[in-house]
Image (cartoon, rainbow over all chains, first blue to last red):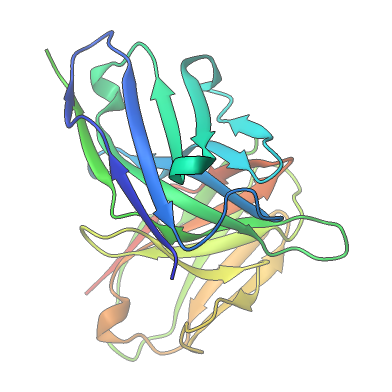
Length: 126
Length: 106
């Protein structure tokens, strides 16, 4: 059974760095076709993809946030960590850890988010 | 970056209605396209991937169609548990984009 759980601060001050940890179970982040990443959602607004760490250690980031994001993994702890620098009140929202599988075939990868954590609300305020 | 637009942004419907939601990409994309359902206070759920393939366990009243740039999600007979917000999502060059969402309510 695949599970993911986010942990980290619920409140950060503007300009601080946010560090979120995703602890997962039921799969290996090194397995072919598996990836783990982060998606956020401001209150009452749409989903926004942030970052994904692919099984082969390839890391991809949202182009609009790339300069502020870093995604890393600790395989021994079954954890993936997201850091976001220079936090601003507009970064307030629910941050989800996600498992993504390659549903593609014939050498054409197609990754989708098939398992989600419960989400953690992060508020940015002084 | 590829942008996705959804229409309508919201709609009111009744149980038993046929509902169609459209998502348009800003440029031609492959069939690496998905739909998600999100209920209030819950994480989204994958409904359809590859533009038209139903995820395991998803009721057959949900269907997806289309190819870049236009995709549709259809609910053939709306059920009480289907009142939610629906998001489209595309995958291209190992990057992802979500649409702005369509809220379906009574």
